[in-house]
Length: 426
Ligand code: KE4
Image (cartoon, rainbow, N blue to C red; front, side):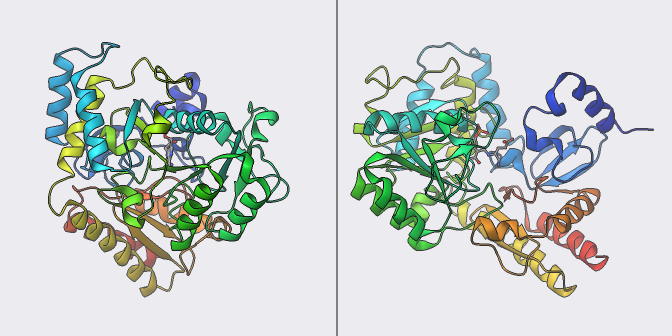
């Protein structure tokens, strides 16, 4: 008899492309039937067949406090009882803007939107409007949402203009995006030497989390900052994933780099749809209705979503929050590595704040090419064995994982014990 997960997936595929509302959820990278979740509480989620899992996806990052945190749910309930949306300014949006600018001092002004994609799309348009230039630099393996200028893969040569990486993206548009190698300082310098006066912006994940987790080489981000300053290009830190995830001041605080613009999402909505872009006042002043760069959104700053975000941000400012989160992440990665080593399985893992990467490879990768060198089949085998054991990791070898404040030492120890059993039977 098919499970309720399978029954729902069959129904879903009749009316929803691939049966999902976002491709990675379809399990196509790992195979098998995606899990339909019925509920979540703290570090756990329960699927429609009643099976419970320790959750290391956390809705891809937003659930830094764990599922259904009582204070966040209470804030959402209270806001909802006052009305779901007005399409007009609310006090909560002012509080949110003030809080974001206080927590991230590089933000002089900020605009709320409803997703990370909207945030990065708007920031790129703003950088082009501010600089009067068209060329955008991004890095292979970094994902910044699905706006057309970002669905571009490297051209034939590293310094040749991009080609569409998705159907429906005009070649004429893709050619305005240059795709370079992450952590390649020489390639970045060469691109500026060749195209400097035409470069509107560089957009980067300051810690890459969409090609599994790749840490920036210390010199890489500083070189980017220096080159953007020297050539009058806008440096955009896409902190949709790293913002308030790797530390209280995001990756910009961790590495001491001041971007010109920052994009945010995920954690700032606490599980509800909130994105944001912000930065230098002289740049943000170009955004409508102040300036000529248009940007808008029916549900931007939605009061119920903002209530969830405000409650979340207030709670993660608590003393020792990030120290404890980082300890839990390290407990997980150290434990997984020890379990794999004990059974001589080629494996490594690393954590930065509340996010982590794990790789079926002897050394942690430092580039897109090295990520591609990881044993994807081994990951898929591990993924399903751990899923069966009740531990839910991202259903792709090319995604980072997330720990929440609800992941106690004991919960993490249970995951490590399950991994030990999996590696013992490897
Ligand atoms: P959204 O439009 O999905 O809210 O945000 C896009 C985005 C922008 N920038 C970064 C650094 C991101 O990681 C994302 C979205 N991340 C993926 C997870 N790899 C979301 C999961 C999904 O696409 O379903």
